[in-house]
Amino acid sequence: MKVNVNLVNVQFRDKKCGEFTGREFSYIADVPLQKGDVVSVPTRYGPRHGCISRVGVPVSELQCRVGELRHITESATPGDNLLKGFFD
Image 1 (cartoon, rainbow, N blue to C red):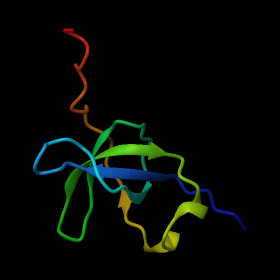
Image 2 (image 1 turned 90 degrees about the vertical axis):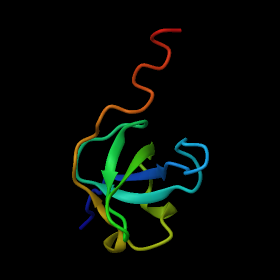
Image 3 (image 1 turned 180 degrees about the vertical axis):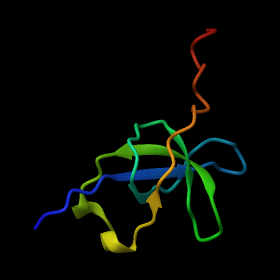
């Protein structure tokens, strides 16, 4: 039996430049998300804000088993770029 899992990649904010950059981490999204959404992401150090960098990640690209992934259970908040380009 094949189970459909919604996998997303998340990038965290770089403390030096303040941008969402660097390594991507995979999570299971229990709520609908889009690229660019900012969400509360569970980490081993507690919740942090992360930006969805990719949706629809294939299971074949995972570096671990699906059962080892953490879940994003909260809906997105408006992203940092919400008004970017609006006043330009």
